[in-house]
Length: 132
Image 1: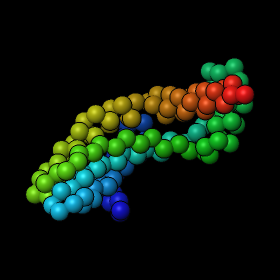
Image 2: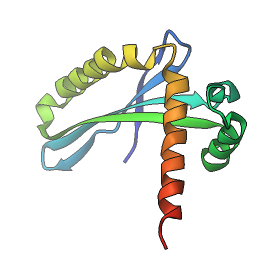
Image 3: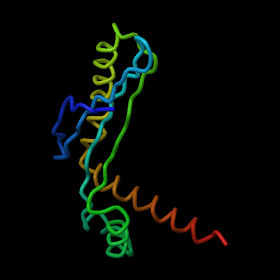
């Protein structure tokens, strides 16, 4: 399966939204039409300044995930007639732009996303510690 970059959009907060076409032929003339939206977010120490253990939290997240995180969202339509696949792809792309650009372009998106991922990491660590 090959992916094709359709568009790159520079968001108001400086992040870059990439929209990828991951569509593929399923069977006969039926397609799985799939678009993937991706935004890379750099993990910065200042995002952790509101936490009591901010420096340690930053180090823990970087140790677990590296210096950047990738936000992804996929839109999929199954069993699309080959004749309609381009129109469906165009509509999915427009839906991603209509719904995600404002959300991902919010000035606080990067810091909130990084802190959410840190919370997820901490929850997994705490859950694992409770297993005998």
